[in-house]
Image (tube, rainbow, N blue to C red; front, side, top):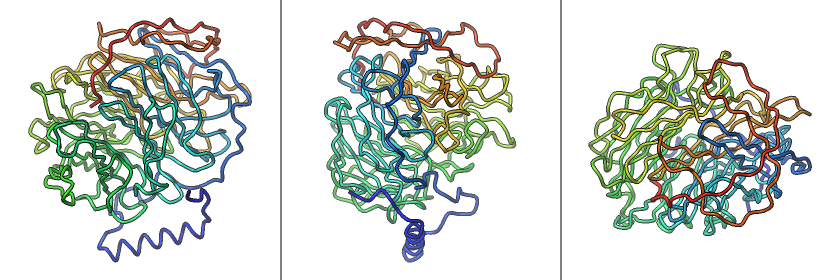
Length: 535
């Protein structure tokens, strides 16, 4: 195992070596205007393991037809007082929608910035959660990304912050336990890494895993790598045209790989590789398309001062229908020509990423550049429906209190259903664990009847600190008339008292609410259809 400590001198030497390597290899340093430092930094030693010593009832927060369930709970299903959790990434077993896993950045105490790779799992479609712990105790990890294959295996990409190297972990039991596939740091990687895998059985690259990251802050030279053996070994990294960052990637039904990224500013690209699926060749990138997203990515917005307003999400339709292999991109951007406010913008390609539509504003509230719509993300269901969720301040008089919002499209993104608030209001400006942000992203996985969402919120109140706490939540969203998000009944532990947030039927502008938990019994399990494969 790599050491989880690194002196300042060693870190400086590491950066100097990277700079020398870049020069020797012809790699350029960050162009002017790009974000000039990594979002993840090794800053603190391991925090004392003092969490779990104090507990309160876990939070269940109903709002309208939606119910958010707290994920980061102790072995008794209780809230852990004094910890922090953010930046969640969700995976769902496509063969059994009751099995869900979420990975997140776990801070044992808000008094430290030291974070680890937390994980939780549910066997009843997200109603009850179990938090066994972290991938490795006292190892500084961040940027969690989870995914699943079509048979129900879960994978977890985790970044070792002290080296900017990453590794892949696998779970074959629905996220209950994880085994490291590659040795510590053997998956190469770098800051703001992301990965995907090929789930199409007929593809030459079926089962291959693809990863890219911010090339300027990386484990070694290059910004892209491929694994042909399920994450056990990774090929020598190569560079991607334009060195994209802060993005995601996906695979089409024909095995073509698409990467959505940008320059951390106003430039966005969709980059294609048609031969990454061929194990006999080193992948090349044959198409680079500039995409207009109507603005710029923003580091340090007022709603998330130490992080992003959101990153770039790319998803490919594999429905087999009229929209099959459409490529979609989404980003939360500061609109061109303005200095405040963000919008969730969407663009679509119907010709394999060769060209994209003009940007479409997903949040449908009246344009107001004092409002923030951030952490926008999307997923495509097996039937081609597009689901999108994001954080939204439209109903807040102070322009910072946020709610989770939801919208969907059934015509390939040409039109979108009216936005719906899916959570109670919370402040994103409390619960910071010595880092002034609530993460950099949230995530969603869609099936034919709805989407499973992992997000961070601050519903729990810590009276000893006088602030709300950052916690990870699960909520099921679906179009009106969709299936109720409830599981096949399974045996569960004795229910514990659970606080609720009083829902508001019609949101009205308000300052940050101070939630007073009241006991509530656990909900009764009800049948839920098994979803199709995750896109």
